[in-house]
Length: 255
Image (cartoon, rainbow, N blue to C red; front, side, top):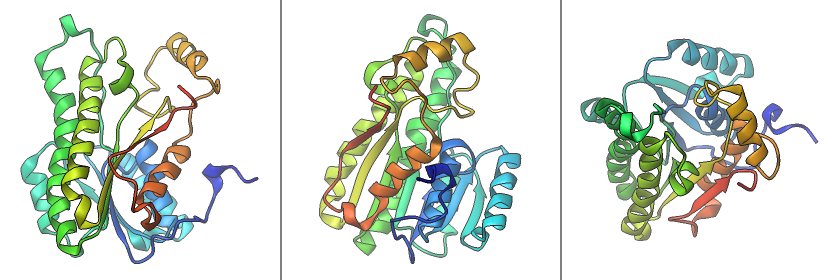
């Protein structure tokens, strides 16, 4: 069987749909963007500062013939005004929103600078709030929508040195479940995908001995692939998952 990361076709049909993927140009976000494009969607991938990663993604899409349905947008999801401008300039109403933007700035709580706490919460939690707020308004008028928020097992089990990250991800689950109730009768579903340990820019800076320790804690004894997370997101973004809302789909290798 062909490895998922090399797949060029999707079993999910998202043709005639528009998706917004925040943090959608590298790591898990890039995998989600590519999966959406291969499923036929038009994708607006947002990012903050990494222009090199954005160019690399566009080049890859040009090589695969996907570029005509991809547009790149640079802004900070934690900036309310920037998010508002993005939505005001949209030419079409998105049917799908994936809140993938996230930062990790680890420190022991007793030594954590206030700015570090605030920045992680601002991007990971408030950023999702900012995007959901305006996306929901558009989706409610269309009486259809799929929102998928990327959370983390850290929000469930906690990890030393990640009180800010864990708090933001736990808060995102609570936001998801509350919003799911609010829009349940409008044809909108709101769910979470909770990736386990996946080797991306967010985790590669961990010491090698710590990475090995984490790998040994995973029942499957391996790290996840970004494409495996994207497959779960694609599932929850499909029309066929109309009766799944307020759920957390864990993609953790059994963690």
